[in-house]
Length: 404
Image 1: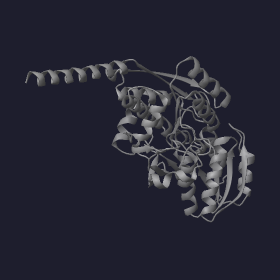
Image 2 (image 1 turned 60 degrees about the horizontal axis):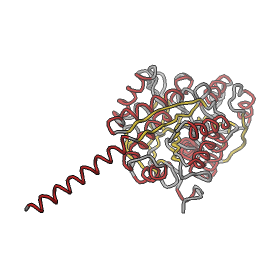
Image 3 (image 1 turned 90 degrees about the vertical axis):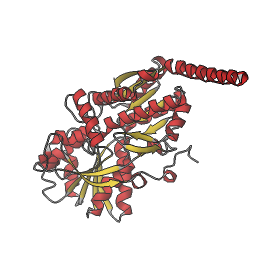
Image 4 (image 1 turned 180 degrees about the vertical axis):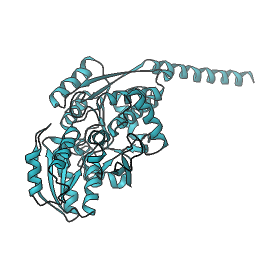
């Protein structure tokens, strides 16, 4: 009996020692996360300081301090320029000890950060950029693409417009990686459904005067004018299209990437009737409403965009993976993020695919009329829920080099 008691005591001591060592290891884990985005330009409202607020909320909800993990959030403005984004990313990784970069709207900037993150063997969780090339030909084992992409937007909004009878399309496209990818992916949807593209024009990014481009679209005879742009460019395009009486003349506008903040800036009188695709809406369910109320209290009363929601969910999943592996080794953390299901109050249950694509529902919304809106930020009517197997490009079709 004494021998058995001694054995049990030894096992208990060993277990306690291991537990204490694990606790010490986690206590020594300091994580630095960089929120890199537009803080002064046309994408500042949809990302900007709101994404920093969302990242801090994720750290708070993860209860990092209670788990012995120290998390520091830093932020910077890439001004929508890939060279500036590259410089900041290198400095963060090489000199400032940043472990993970998140957000990064503007696809050209995101693609640049994607390559540097691979080179430096860090982690990149993108929420702000749209190009589907991040999980396609330029995919990286160090990158997760959260929230949305051009493939999902094209199949959501583009597919809905074609089904509604919009067979002839003309594209007004932002002249950089995002706009090109969105036009490409939407063209594929239109042509697969038996429609045709009768023309396109590319405008400078960012732009201010879209009058000549809109006149070309108006004279093209297209049923649908596809706006392959975003943020302030989309807002100004829609406003100027209204001034030209384009929709009154029978042509439809397809805002292929429209954010909640865009609708807020346009006002329901101008935005009403727009069909759009998003992966998150603050008023979708009780969980999204509760979180969004907290966000608004910390962000001047503004409700969150899907980009800001994606930053929150991505940071939370990253921290959960760090806790699960007991450290922040990039390869181990990336493997765990792909192994573990995702589960958060904003997007619900989902997963991260081998190519880095985050899989969850997408939603087709229609902007309400002023009479239908009952409160501030009450802008969307849910038209359809698009399940993951229909929302996202199949793995085999992406062309990701490291996917076998």
